[in-house]
Amino acid sequence: MEQRRLGRSGCAVSSLCLGTMTFGNETDEQGAFAQLDRFAEAGGTLVDTADVYTAGAAERIVGRWLAARPVDVTDRVVLATKGRFPVGDGPNDLGTSRRHLRRALDASLTRLGVEHVDLYQLHAWDPHTPLEESLGFLDDAVRAGKVGYPGLSNFTGWQLQLAVDLAAQRGWAVPVTLQPSYSLLVREIEHEIVPACLYNGLGLLPWSPLAGGWLSGKYSRDARPTGATRLGEDPARGMEAYDRVSGRARTWDVLEAVQDVAEARGASMAQVALAWVRDRPGVSSVILGARTLGQLEANLAAADVVLTQDETARLDAVSDPRPADYPYGGPAIEQRSRGLAGRGGVAG
Image (cartoon, rainbow, N blue to C red; front, side):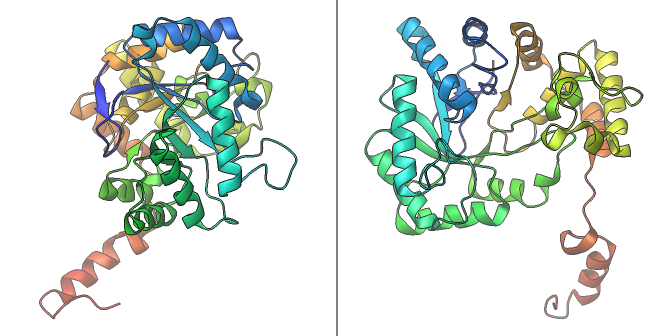
């Protein structure tokens, strides 16, 4: 499996990452161990978890796997976890305050059975805590040897830029990664977030690269999902809810294009969708989330899928999120820029 740099850091990670949100819930411990074993066998190194995945069970499972496997296997693992969301009922059992993050990190290390993690990420923005407090804690954790690198997750463009600037200004450890939702059906981060990551050297770790299963081809326009799938069990589930996504004409155009590309090259739709997001600018590693070993096996095959320029261009075009012209460009901005060229600049 291809190895890439974790953002601006010198740490190498596999281009595909094993996500563990299903561990302890949709995937039992035996199944999780099988996934971890297969991922490591395939050359995967980056394993991502979080303290709130199945109320800490995912971290415990990963910890028991690490303890049960030979050192030559576990030494290759680049371990990432996150803290921010509620882990209890108390007023300080959530957020990115120094108090909560200190306890959250120590609890994660205990569950994982390790003395440090390679990447510790703020799981989301906290509007109630000064960012200096959160970044100061991350720097302290790096200096204490508990964390290799700080990272961010679910931040907007301006939040990301503020975090990078504050850390650099104070001489603190600067975040090296951002985890966003990113797929052929969710490309809006390209307006602001991706440019901010590219400018600052943050590596993207896309989650939900199959858009909650949509890009695997398991859902159709003519039948509401049923059975043992996420939307079959709960059609209103999250941002990929059936009614929310199926009502967009663009959704079916994208799925048709992905299916055409997949059939022409003898690959699955999921492999094509994963290959597309893996090769987007700034992506360090793509997070795979699987219920079963079979699903993981199929998705790992995306490591060998390299889309042609024509295939990529077709998928780019059909999935283009098409932002409003202003302030991102468009005819009005281009015409005004041309009209003011040579007059000393562009007026507001």
